[in-house]
Image 1: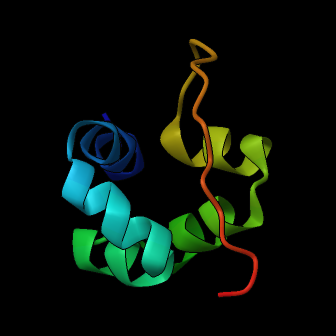
Image 2: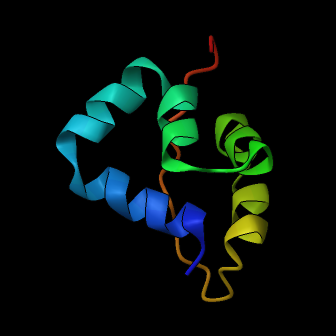
Length: 70
């Protein structure tokens, strides 16, 4: 499993992390240890970029929460 997939799982399971993410998504992703490419892909909202970085061949869906002002 990729770090990005682990991040999405943690974000789904941790309400405090999600609240912090809504306030400052970039900071939360940096704290989690995501790479600059992973952060950029998530913030772009481009599902194909995210899929390519997760290595997800099973076509799982992720809901991307993005704040375009950040």
